[in-house]
Amino acid sequence: MPVIRMTLIEGYDDETRRTLATRLTDAVRATIAAPLDGITVAIEEVKPTSYMRGRVSRTPGPPLPGATDLVRDFLRAMQARDLDAARDCLADGFRMTFPGGAVFTTLEELVAWGAQRYRFVTKTYQGFDECFGETGMVVYCFGTLSGEWPDGTAFSGIRFIDRFTTDGGKLTEQRVWNDLAESRATPS
Image 1 (cartoon, rainbow, N blue to C red):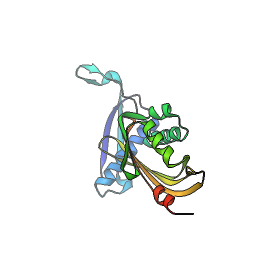
Image 2 (cartoon, one colour):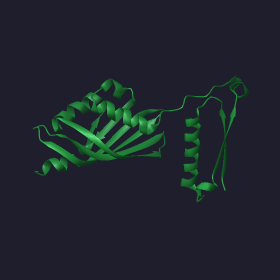
Image 3 (cartoon, one colour):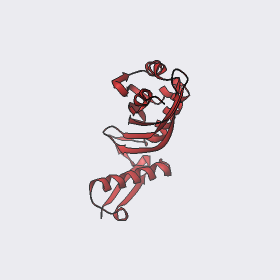
Image 4 (tube, helix red, strand yellow):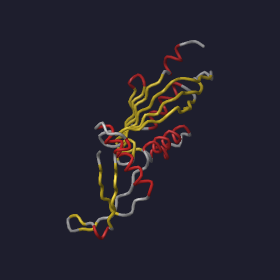
């Protein structure tokens, strides 16, 4: 059965080491037919003074924020219209694609576009899924939307899926799918 041995510079907390070991285990299970209880991950630590690269002792890099936590923080800030807090979650070049092919590069563009579609919208989450991407984690969140149309009529139970990509602990892209237009077209 596979045994993964990793060497880290001392300084990472227990949660970061546990997350790393879990993700290494998941990578093995996604690549070869190994039973979960047959995969061993051993993390060995060395003191920063015992680790040198290019004649320079190194210190550990900071752990990245949890990808789902990052997405939740962003969505919470957007719902509260705290654009500064939402912007703190974004990488340079962040891009959003919404239903109908609407593409935005600033949060202000998104807010202005949304104001034409609804007075407000809130999300009820049914789940968050993470997977590995080329630059970092990919997070899918899904659930239902509720809120008010521009005329003040309430809506609820409208399905949505958001897909976020991350790089370096920041969001790089959001893609959104939902049934908002279909629900608006159907008289209630």
